[in-house]
Length: 508
Image (tube, one colour):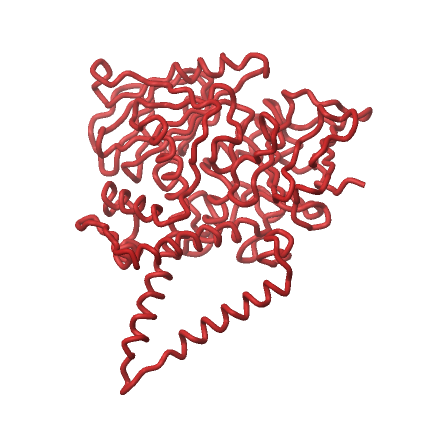
């Protein structure tokens, strides 16, 4: 398994430059190690340098540790800036989500609805969900919230306890022990801040309003306050420009301060709260770093984000192989050649199955490349959930580049009962690739032409081959990208590996 961290072509540099950077970094490390002491004590300059370095290191590691939180907060704050926030506000992308919305690996082939709420402010919330709605209820860490009875975590809809019939879902804050109304599914959150991630499916690109209308049947209100609750609002998010990505500057630490204030000990173990304390973030004092410290935090956030992207391009971590197939470049951290859900070395809580540690690198990998996860999303039951494969490289192991033309062959009988799609994303930040097309996605509902053998060939590149416009995904010149192949409601050949997509190959 390759363990190369950065490929020169991907980052737009040459190996000599990379070597120079490595040498400079080694010199920096040695300089720190050799800072002078006088009379067995650090000099004033040594103390200042090391304390600045300590702040930078603590902040950088805190950023990587907090990737799921920062992923959540990027979406929450981006939505709040555009639409406001609260249990009654559900922005809906009524015309499919395009590249103008900056968010981690969005899906343009269904309809999204999102709600961000604070149970510490509202108290327990009831979500009345209509039939056939699909979604996940997550806490601030994007952990699927456990459901009373232990059989389900986070999911609602077909893979959830309602099995697609809809119903009343009660979401309660940490430590709540009140009476539960009859006929309510009870989700017990580990944090006050929660995230409703809802999806609705359409059957035709010419008529997606039923999917939108289904989302608008949702009702959310504080327990026992249905008649007095704020009315639901469904702002139309379609076509707008919103930044819902994780923040990569010092404002990321303002977001962590908000979470410490609203969560307290719910947020993290004492050691990590201590790390945040070390950079000035506590629940009982203002967070007001001086200009010098804020500059360090800004640099740490930038470094942490870039490091997360480096981690997120790996074929595997800590001896785990993420390749879905031994002879392909497609990756999936939970369903692949070395692990199949539910028998995976790292669970959805990112705890090692055979050791007592949390795999922080695997968690950072996931939340820099995706958002939200649940058992339903990785279900191995045919017809449920979804199957995702991510491709960072072509068949030769080279980074995907916008100036190059590629072909992707999908064998006949693509095993997806709802739909399949291929979507392109910006290598820099994992948002949808702004490629000049209405949507950076192509799939079943686009009805691409099939070959005589029933297979489907997609063309990916800066220009469409003559006569292949209906099977073409545009790239963006001089920009790297990656691709995700989605199979929704995957059938058995996808789950057992007997159906295999081709690699993304350079066009001849």
